[in-house]
Image (cartoon, rainbow, N blue to C red; front, side):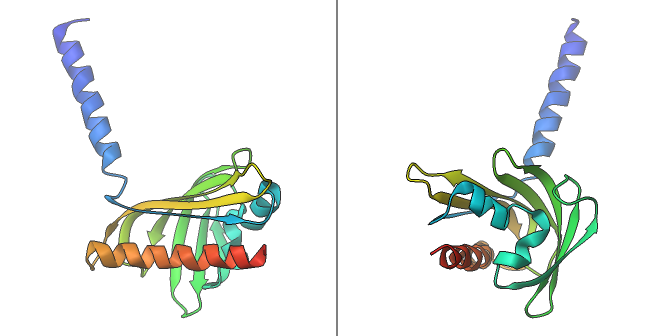
Length: 166
């Protein structure tokens, strides 16, 4: 390989790495709870991309507007209790690992570049840990306010799950 070819390959790799890094936001929220249900039961409740309205108390409707349920590229529109809408795109869905990831594409929330994953993990005693994580950047507010907003969304959903499986 010539020096010029090596230089081009290195430059391409660096540019690709830099562009990938810009996709993830600089802020993170990581929440988890333990629920009194098996991973299979817990995943049955939360594992379908278009069923956030089934378990999250703030979401009153979820409509699949594009793609197929649980297939990467599917788009859902969530309607909140206050009438606001959030559009999200499914990035990956894995029933074997009990996880899916998605991105917000349109939202009144004070975030941009939002990417999230929801997963269910087995505990040694047959219960489940539900983990909800995300990265994003603040939009129109300071970092703390953006983090607190997303943390509040997660807390509401996770606490609802915990109550459901008591």
